[in-house]
Amino acid sequence: MTYATGVLLDALDRGVVYGFSLMDETGLGAGTVYPAMRRMAANGWIDAAWEDAEEAHASGRPARKYYSLTADGRKALEQARVRFPGLAARTTSARGEAIRPVGGDV
Image (cartoon, rainbow, N blue to C red; front, side, top):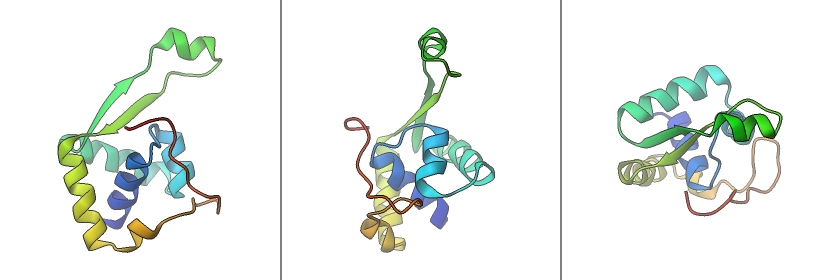
């Protein structure tokens, strides 16, 4: 488990659910986020699903791939919080803004 993986799991737990928002909230680049997401999916820590393309088009943007933690992902997050105690204390985003969960329970 890397620190970047822990940061991403933590962001997912807080309700940050798609790639660009994960990059924005964590300050990690695409070259870190997307390979990590593929590894986490392969480990069974996250699920991924594309949103309806017509709905995205109606909003004037490309379809987003939404990610969510699985039960195994929540266990991995618990391990990450033990390994990297600073994760539990994260209260601001990479932009320095207060972090608030997006949407409901992920």
